[in-house]
Image 1 (cartoon, rainbow, N blue to C red):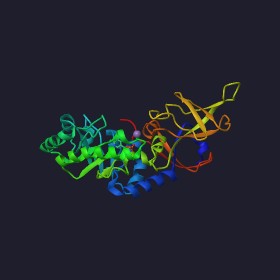
Image 2: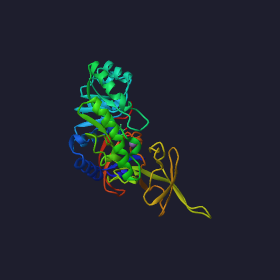
Image 3: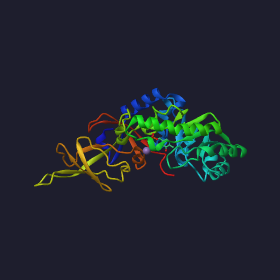
Length: 337
Ligand code: PLP
Ligand code: MN
């Protein structure tokens, strides 16, 4: 199939960039040193590539992601790195499921849902989930008393991922991980899980890194200096062109708006153009060289996870041109809740 046959907007994955990202990460964090986070791509076919690269365990953010991974035969060791108050769908899965807990309530939900293994989720500085480090040991005792296996701790330093100053990112990562290791000393277990794409090379304290964005990448992580290639773009069609007149410069409009792009990290990027703004179904931009109605462009999203979650499929392409070959089409099958 040829790229011209796709209707737009369409999510594209540059297969060579994806394969390079998977190989580079597997070289940096081989095997169980990486527990890839599937929320970044929500696609079991891509997770299967990560498994083939040597990573048997995965991180999930939702019950639906755990279910889908189990159904796809990728349930060897799934960590739901999130708090869940209704775990009933987890206990019935044909998979090894470990659930993050940070309170007596989430612990009770794990027991009630038939989950057998947990990690104590520790707050390391991001104001989100996680118990205070000093209280982690008591929660672990409580979990064991309830018959659960405590595999260790997790703590996500998400507030540091995009820090521009890498030395500062490294220093603060160490501070966060000292909190996590203090909790681990009280909790026990073999796992210390944390980290992400922004700290994958800096976080040397965890036993496993939960990075996900590295596989497809976005412009925010590229701006933060990460070495992975931009594999993800959204193909769009130019639907209107306005020529310059008087004081007003010219602009073009493509059929990809904020309903096809995760926008919380800002506007997308169009190579060879200045992006002005996005509306629901429009992208207005000023191209450096004139474009015609019907031309196609590839738009680089600022944030990978919410972009992917808006699309039903991702199309694997090789090459940059308008006639690039479409090699495969993967369903984004872990969407929804
Ligand atoms: N771990 C948790 C709990 C997360 O929420 C995230 C992303 O937000 C990550 C790890 C790492 O993701 P990324 O690869 O995008 O840095
Ligand atoms: Mn993200």
